Structures are given as structure tokens and as C-alpha cells.
Amino acid sequence: MPKPAIRLVRFTGRLLLALAAVATPVVVFLVLIALTDGAGSGLAAWFTTLGAGTVLALWRGRHRTRSAARLVPFLPVIVAAALTATVCIPTVPTARRSPPALPFVDAQHWNLATGSRVAVYHYPPANPGPRHPVPFVYLHGGPVRGISVQDHRFLQLLARQGYDVHAYEQAGGGRSDLLPMDQYTISRSVRDLAAFVDRLDKGKVDILGFSGGGVVLTRALADPSVAARLHRAIVAEPGPMDGPTAHITGHKGRASAQSLAPAPNGPRSTHVPRYAVAFGLMRLGLLTPDTGLIGQAEGDNAFTAADLGSDTASAYCARDAYRIPSEDTAQNFSFSPAASLRVQQTVKASPSIAPLLRQSRTPAMLMIAECSSQVRQWATAVLADAPAIQRTQYMPGVGTTCGTASTTTTTEPPPSSPRSSRTSRRPCRTTRPATRSPPSCATTNEDVAARHRQRRAKREAAWALHEVRPRTSSRSGRVPAALSKGRLLGADSLAGVLPFAAARAAMSGAPDTGDGADAALERTLPGSGLDPWTGVVVHALFAFAIGSAGAWAYRRRDAA
Image (tube, rainbow, N blue to C red; front, top):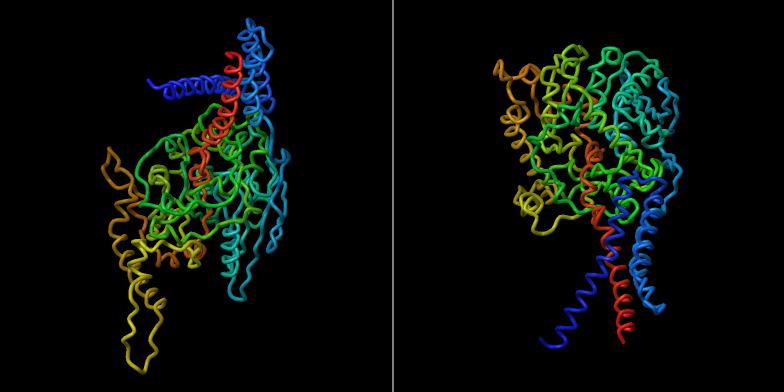
């Protein structure tokens, strides 16, 4: 074998040994982080790893006489210590940093009877026409997330339609105060809802619960003491509502834009080793939400809108992949991944609420979108036998948000987009009578697109009931009562159901990603460029190369 090849093989072998020498302490450190639950911001695991590495380096260099040779075993320990130290050092404030005040609405803070201190927003009726006597309450998605700017615009729209709109950010989210981690439970969220309605002191209320808010609303319907406070309820695109449904995996809606839309821009917490390790180990179930590695406030401050990746796009149909607007601002965004995971754990550990829902008598409606990212049976398995569900509303042409994409295009589609070739790239027909002005291409294409949507809505209505219907009962073989008696309508007829539901359906892109945010931690922040482990590996490989080169140089000098 030629000498250059031999040298290359030897160098590669030494490099691999150096990498292994540095990787071993890093792996030991991560194991200790999991075993100690990140005690002391990870310093307990760091000092233990450093001590063990130092003892091993002393043992390896005990027979070496030259001082330089004795230092060689310490190089991997020093490199590993430097890498793992980045996991123990916070890079964002550890105290709660609430979003700044919004310029168009004042946030009040109410102390509820449950002990929660929540941020409350009020949009009084803004139209001179008739006003609706029943107050309207909006439960946003999450859980433990703030209300997005787009949702605030939606609430303003309701106020202009004559509704007295109230909304609050659930405890721990947005501008609401944090709770001790063990108090984040789904039952606490239901009690907070009841306490909020009592504090409002305006009698029964109409409530729209979207995604995570739909879960809270459904469980409120199952509690007679809370349901007595509700006048009407709309459950829109709910997530899993109890333990049995949380373990259901099955049919979802039609393809969403999640895998097609461009990745969002902005800083990501997963690019920082500390938060990549923390959120990654939480996702694997190796760290508890109340971990000592990062505090609740620090995790809330570190998590950014870009960390949600393409979850916002999952709220839109695939045909709208290049028409997705921004739902929130970086300053207003707030999400607590640890608290959200804690609430989800309590949902998974709860018993079935189906028997309690059968006793509910509060009029309710279930809304399901065509391109939903939710499992269909999360909603239908629980609500199928609920007599209070008087209508199942299918929404063709929309995603999880029950709204269409904004007409303001944020990203232009590529020239080869198959969807754009059907409408926007169709030649403009200008052969009209001379007495009429020829329409612009944009107007003609909008008309064509509208006709396509109308025809598609008619086709969707034919198979919609079959798609959203859960499995028939093995005992009776009949369609569940809620879906068989519930009228299934197209999107255009929603205005005849409830005006504020129609407003939510007609919003041009107001994606509270809801359970997209719920599932962000479960899927380790998809679309974030680097997953929690890759960020650590990239930093490690760079340092390993430097450390191994130094170790090789010392070995050559010692051999000479």
C-alpha cells in the first residue's frame, strides 16, 4: 500500500479515536442530565462528568514522563467540558418576559377564583345596528399560548357585527401569569373558564373554542356545573379530549400545506444547544416538564414563532401553500412548551368523558375542516353520542383554522406550480362586445377560481358525511346520532347557522395554529432546520476536529 494511503488510514483512525474520546463524555453528560432531571441547570451532571473525565485522564497519563504527553489525555475532557457547558448556560432571561402591550386593545388582568391571574381583552359592539344580547367568549388554541394578532383581528370583526366579545389568555400563556408546573392540568383550564364566566357576571355566554380551546370547551360541556353557564357552544377542530381518544391514530383531512410551504424565517431555540437538548429530551420523555434544566419562564422566553416550523402551514390546504399569511408578530408571540406538554399529559391520563357528554343539553355545533391536520376521530369518537351536538359543520376548501388563505400573497408560487397553472396563469379572454370594457386578467381569473370553488364545494358535500363519520357501532350498526341528525352543510351556508361562526370561517387567514402548537413539542419542532440533536452534533463535530488535530500533533511530537 502506498505510504500516503497508509498515512491517510492512520490519520483517519486517530481522528475517529479522538472523536470517540470526546463523544463519550458528552453521552455520559446527557445520560446524567436525564437521570438527574437537569438538576441545578445541568451543573450536577456537568461536574460529575468533568470529575469522571479528569480521573480517567490522570489514569491514562500515569506512565508518561514528559509533561506535554501527560496533557494529551486531558484534551478530549477539555473539549467535552466546553461543549457540555453550553447546555448549562442560559442565553435568554430566566425571569418571565411578557409580550408588550398591543396598540389596538388594552389588556386587563383579572384574578380568578381559582387563583389564576389572566389577561383579558374586551371588544364591545362597534356597529350602529342591532346588537346581540348574549356575550361572546373566545377560547384560543394552545394550550398555554397567547392570542395571536390575527385572532385579535377576528375578534374585532365579531365586534363590528354587533357582538360583545370577550377573550382571555389561559394561565401561563401570553400576558397571563405563570402557574406552578404541577397546576397545569386540563381540569384547571375548565375551572378557569367557569371562574371567568362568573367574573364576567353577564349571565350565560356563547363560546367558540378552537383547537386546544375546543378541548377545554368540550370538557366544560361534560361538567354540568360549568355547562350551566353556557348558552351555546361551537367546538371547532378540537384535539384529543381524553385518554382514550388521545391514543387514537386514524384518518385525517385531505393534504395540507405543511410539507409544501416555505419554512418560516427567524431565530430558533433549537439552534442553541441548551434548548435543543432540553426540548429534545422532553420530547423523548426523558425530562419532565418541571425539569431543573430550564425553568418555565426561560423556556417560554426561548421558544420562538419559527420553532413551530411548518405547523402554521398545516392549517391550510395544499393548494394554498404559497398563500399563507403571517399569523403573529415576533413581539406578541408567546408559547410555553413545558406547560403545554404538561396539560397534554393530563389529557392523556384522564378517563373517557363520553358518558358525561351524553347527559349534556347545552346546544352545540362541531366544525370540521376539509384539510384538517387533526385526526377525525378525536372529535367524532367523543361527540358522536352527545345529544347536545345539533349540527356537524363540514368546511370544504379550508384547513384547521376553518378559514381560507389570505388574498395578500406572502410568497410567490414557483412558475411550475400545478395549482397556479389552472387559474392565475390561464390566458385572459378579452373578446367582449365593444360596448363593454374588457376585464383584467385578474378579474377573469378570480371568476374562474370562484366557479371552481363552487363546483368543488358541491362535490365535497357528497362525500363529506362519509369522511367525517366515525365507525358505526358494532351493536347497532347505525350511524351515530349526532352525525346522522346533524345537518351537514357547505361553507357558504354557514352564515345561516351562527353569524360569529361564519365570521371565523370567512376570515382570510387567521391561523391560530392551535394543536399545531400543541404538537410542536411532540414532533420536536418540525421544519426548524436543525432538530434538537443535530444542533449538538454540529457543534460537537467542529470541536472534535480541533481537539483531534491537537491530540494528533502531540502524539507525533511524543513519537519524534
